Figure 1 (cartoon, rainbow, N blue to C red):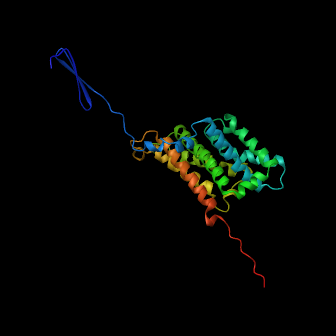
Figure 2 (spheres, one colour):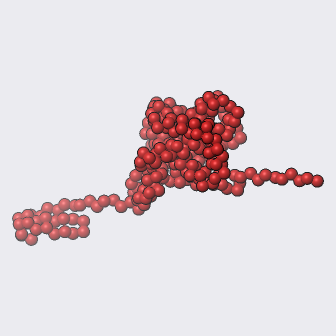
Figure 3 (tube, helix red, strand yellow):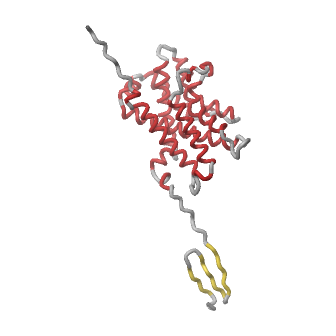
Length: 271
């Protein structure tokens, strides 16, 4: 074509003719992610805590769940002992892992989390009936467990990713065991805090939160580091976080409501 200005569009090219000269420019198409549906919904927005309101709600549910276990296990103890035990149980992993990675511990870096711990301490101290309602109400227990596991999944994935970025590679192309160890401790470190417990928390076997924390940290780390596992995937860490949170919630609900988790009381036979 000899027209001074003429444009013709093709499927992936634009051919511009100016005074008989052709200039060809390639237009790159946006990549198509077949897994985009994993983040394009309200459930993923809630799991990733994209708003402060959701984050505060999950913090409250996390602290409530831990406070229930602490107060049930420390009956007859002083209020001071319960308060210190609650802080240690809520922030154990958030203290140990940042110290290992030379970071600021969570109770110091996040002002909202200590507030959630204090609120739940006063609720369980002065309104113990709420704890009884929680034990008898499956819907309330389901909601609290989901909030607890969503926040725990975020903590596990966050510290696993940070450890993977800070720990240098040694024998492999990326650090393997260090980030998984840090993520596991982040998800269950409260069970070992204070440190005078030693190995008592695992004396009778690995508890379900420890087992799920290890699986979640291992999956997140390997999924985000091995390229062929997330090939063609946009925002792979966020999608891995969603998958870990769904696994945490499903596993915890199964261990809580399955018939095997509910002990059957044997009636004594009278002769």
